[in-house]
Image (cartoon, rainbow, N blue to C red; front, side, top):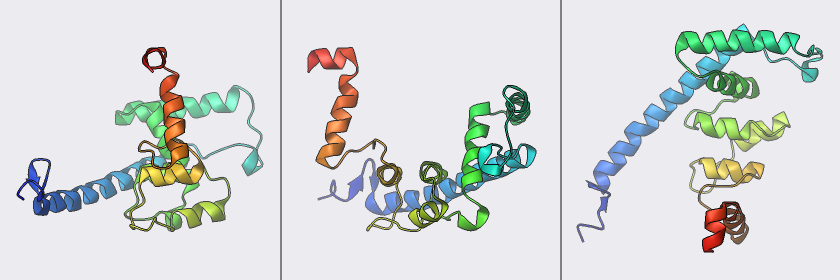
Amino acid sequence: PEEIDKVGNVSQQRYEQIVAELRQVVEQQSQGQFTIGDRALEIEPMRGSDEGREVLPGQDLFTVRQALTRLAEDIGLRRSTVENARWTASRWPKEHRQAGVSFTVHRVLGSIPDEEERFAAIKQPPEDGAVAVDDANRRVGRQVEHPVSPQEKITAIHTLARDEDVAAVV
């Protein structure tokens, strides 16, 4: 009976305390990521055909890359992290960001091209109320980490079978 009331090495009650604490940490991290993205957007706004501006090959992109590389180095992050935060922030204006939903879920759902659909998607949590990364990946048609449906399991098997060692054993 005691084992049933435990999660890992802690009681169910302690586990729930840990989850509550870590949800606050995830919220702080998400806010931090959006702040990085917002400041990167301030330094280098998104450019391209969707804004009616033509990007000159090599010239404008090189300038953007230089600016974001400098920013990343000055704050101790990889440029790709800053670029990721910038892109995600560009997809989610402040009034459409959802508290309690991780930055990762915002990033995944950010790939929905239609704004109305994107903004609605983040407001439609699954039945249990939590918006998990797998739920977001399902929404945009990406492979999930924890497959549930038969098709998700088949996709996972195909992905694993791409590895020659795995395929040989199977």
